[in-house]
Structures are given as structure tokens and as C-alpha cells.
Amino acid sequence: MDRFADWEYPEIEEGKPTRYNWLVQNVENLSLGYRTDIGAFTYINAQHGVTIEEEVQIGSHCSIYSVSTIDGRTGPVLLKRNCRIGTHSVVMPGVTVGENSVVGAFSLVTESVPDNVVAYGIPAKVERTLEREPGSTSGA
Image (cartoon, rainbow, N blue to C red; front, side, top):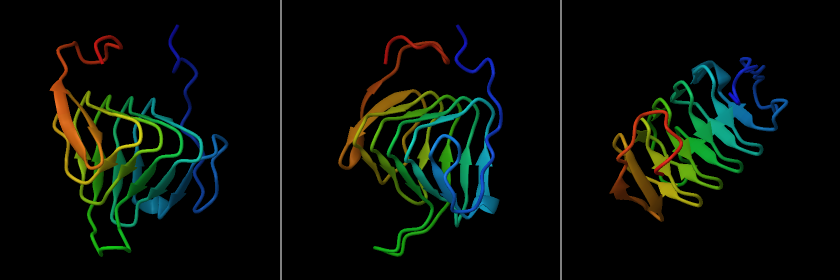
């Protein structure tokens, strides 16, 4: 069964929860790809640009920041095709998460993650390479 068979682009309004209960600030700087899955209570600040490519999955309660008021860091965030971000993770400004990569739950992603790897921790570090076909659900 294809979980995205009836996927439709969500209605996203500035600072208001979508019908799936995730929220975006600076909507004009968000690029959302086809067949994405963003979990409830996720927050996206796209002030300096957030691009979420096709078939990306983001768990619930995640935070994605293109600006950090704590350390003044800014920069676009890129979540490449078919990557997955585990629940309660934080992606900081200027980070790219590579194609097919998996970020484990409760991770703090402060540096870019290459394609086809599993990364997790605080801060997130690459723990292993994925030896699977892109789009496959096994092996991660």
C-alpha cells in the first residue's frame, strides 16, 4: 500500500498550524517537495530558506531553523530527497541532510550529513553508511 497515494500539497499559512498540526514561520522562504510527511508539532523557521525535497519524512516534535537567535547563526536548510528526520530532532541553520540519509530521534544536527548514512546524537554524528537501494524501507 502506498501511504502517499492520496497525497496533496498542504495549505500552509504564516504562523498557523496546518491541518496536520505543524507550523511554519516565513512561509515565503519554504520550498516543500512532493510526497513529504511532516509530523505533528514540528516547527519550521524558514527566514533564510528551508528546502524540503520529495519524499522526505520528518517526525513529530522536530524543529528546523534557518536562523538561531541564541548564537546568531543563519543559513538555508536543505533536506534532500528521501531523507528521514527522527522525532524530537533539531536541525540548525546552514545544514544539509543528504539524500536517503536517516537522522535518529532526539538528535541535534549542527553539521551537514552526507548522502546514504545514519547519523544521530547530540551533536549528531555519522554512525554508519547505508547499503541499500534508494527508496527502500529496509536496512535502516
